[in-house]
Structure formats: structure tokens, C-alpha cells
Image 1: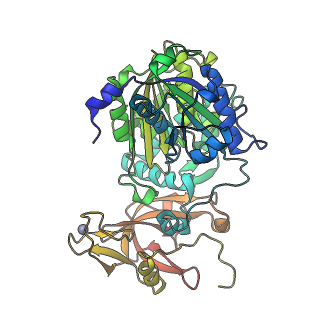
Image 2: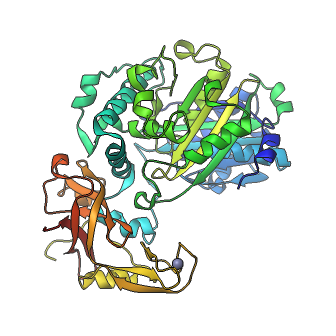
Image 3: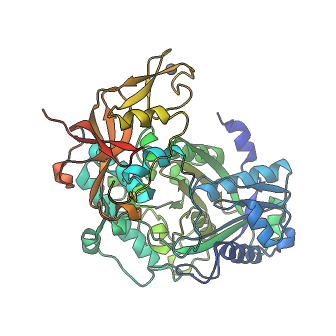
Length: 387
Length: 140
Ligand SMILES: [Zn+2]
């Protein structure tokens, strides 16, 4: 079990000094995934006032650090290719802090790049893996089908109509945030409740607008010591708490379909940071589906199991509401190249720095970023604070 | 098979050869631990309940209930283009284990299905080697 006292000592021992997306996100057929990694890396280092030559640690997922480091032309002294789906990059933030605190490195670079929409050579899966043997032959393939199985079970346990209403609330409120973010895929496309309910079925109970986008995008994060953060271009955002883990790979092996691993990583990250839910100014929660973010609010402890439909009612998660959620427009309406988790951290850092323009939350001092990976399999949570 | 089978097929591994061989003969089997007597799905080289290494194969009743389902409208793989809408499901077997499958022999309509409804196994041959255990509403 995690040693919470030692984790509390680790809290605050590294800071995020740079975040960025690739030059373009959305439809980017003229860039390879490694090109997206690289653009994001250079942009994030520029954001930090650092150069590639400063980087001594590399973290990435989907690709091996071998490929990414070679493409970048760097020779890292600490590397981590932990690849557990879209949560990976949130987990990398915590791993980077641990590595920096232990003395393995000083400037850690986390990169992501994925052409979910336009990839010319998607990475194949191992066809002997249990998921391929027992789920794929039945057409239980990929996130929409798998998450829909979990969502239908949630509806059975907590009520179909109120679950449906909550999913609609999330879709609409998240779109309102996207309408304030010029980089969002659906920046100029509003979404009404009627349009939500009229949207075509992908995998019932999921409408198309319950599902995240499929885009091309890259992002990167630069992490360093608190001392070096002081002299960085924009100052540092402190890493205060973290948690990670997973409890299954394929959906039919999930121990409890309505309770993902955030049930552990949320409380751990908050306890390590020494804060409570009510202290948070912003929640950035991976929204692969409307259902995911709704259930995750319960898993993380913002409300009790089954209470999320009440928690998100009446557009409280929309701009101007009492619970700012996914202010970049989320995977639903901003961008989602496949493993979206890194973008929750990018937006949290920008909000904490107060640089998000029209969608800026007032006095944003403490934020939670949470990634979910695989098929509700893996989660990573971080708590970030303004220094 | 007259037409080429275009859906993903399982590639049996040494610990699952028996499961797929039995399915091809119209039998649904699972491993049972000789130490703690728990069943497990899917087959492994040890018992995930007690870490015991002694497992035996047992034929299951083929009876179960619908634990959850989705009605798939957008094919997640080109091989399923002609099958949509279809019912993907997790079935809770009478012996206590859950397995992924499909429900067939009933309209793919959320109103026609209910969580907890009784199901029984049917075997659908995919190729000469592979037969998939699926489920249909149980006759009362
Ligand atoms: Zn056992």
C-alpha cells in the first residue's frame, strides 16, 4: 500500500514549468504522430524558457521513449514508457516528480502525439491477448462498446432516466466550454439538449455526442525542480498530490462496472496534497464519454455512488456554474486523439496560471487532473497548485 | 464456410486450447480450482482466488443471466458491418463467473432486453476450428 506519510513528504517536490499542444490540433493529416510529439515538445520547452539540450528525462506512451528520444535527438538519463492508455501522461507527471526528487534527473519532458484521425500506420494489437481471444470475436471492440456496457449497468443500478439526463447535461455543458476555446474542434458549433437527444446511436445507450472526438493532436509537459521553476519563464505550477493504478484490462474483467480505479487514486492524491474536494477550484476529468466523467465524479469522491446525476444537474458544470469542469471543452468537444489524458494537465496548468482568456476561472489556485485509460481500466490523478 | 470469415478470431493460447476445443464440440467449460473450488473465467495457469496451481476443467450448465448489454449500431470493425445492430453483452453464468458474449435470437431493442433475464448458451460455428459460445433467451 502507498505510504501516505512519505508521499506527503514528496508533495511539492517538483513543478510544471511548460505546457503546450502541437502547432495544430484537430484534422492534421500532414503530420505524423512523431512530428506531433516533437512540435509539442518544442512548444512546451519554449513555454518554460528551456531547450531540448536541457532535457535529461523523457516520458511517453503509445510509443517507446526509444523512438521519441531518437526522433528528438536527445539522450535521456531517465526514461519511462509506461503505457496504460489515456491516463499514462497524468501518471508520468507523478513519475517525473518521483524521479526528480530521487535525483535521477532535473528536467523531465512528457510527450504525446497521436493521429487518431489520420494515422497511416496504426499500431496493431497482440492477437493472443485475452481481450482479443474473448471479447473481440463478439464485437466487443474498442471504447464505445466497452464503456456502453458499463453505462448500461450503471443505469440498471441507479436509474436510466436520471443517468440519461446527466449524460445530456455533461454533453451540453462541455460544449459550452468548447465554445469559449478557439482551439476546440467544436469552437463554433453549439449543442442543444434537443440535438443531444436526436443524435444517432453509436452503441446504445451512447449517442454520437456521448462519445469523444477522434482527432490528431500532440501535447507536452515540462517538469523540473522547485528551484529551477522559480527562474522559469512563467513560474512553476506545483505538483501536490498523485495516485495511479488499474484493476483490469478488458471490460468484462472489471471488478465493479460502476466503480473505476479513481476510487483509490482520487482520495490518495487529495490526501497526499493535504486538501479536500471543496478546496478545489477546477476539475479536469477525462471525458472519453459523457458517462465516464459522470461516473468518475463519484469514483473520485466528489459525490456518493449513484449521486452524480444530481451533482451535475442544472448545468452547474457549465461556464458560470458552481463546479467548473473540463474548461477546455474536453475530449468531447475540444480534442481527443486517442489518449487524451495529457490535455487535462495542460488545461489545469493554464487555468492555474490565469492565461485562458474568456474561459478563465476566477482565482484558480488548486486543480485536479484525472486520466482514465484503456477500458475504464487505469486511472491517474494529480492535484496541482499555484505556488 | 461458403464466404470468408471476416471478423476477428481468437488465437488460442496453450492455457486456452481446451476451452476452444470444447466449444467446437458444443460444450462450455471453465476452470475450477481443486483447492478453493472457485470457478474462473478466463483460463489461466493458476487460480486467481487462492493462487493454487491445481485446476480442473468442468463443463458448465450453460445457464446464466444478462448482467449488462449494449446495442452496437456503429461497427467497431469492418467484419461487423453486416451485423449491426447487434447485442454485445456480459453474461453472469449460474456457476458465478462472468463472460463476454453476444445475445442472439431476440430483437436488438433496449425495450426487449432486461438486466437479469434468463439466458442459455448456444454455439455458433465461425470456422472449422473456432466456435463461439453465444446466448439466447432461455425457454421457461
Ligand atoms: Zn483457488
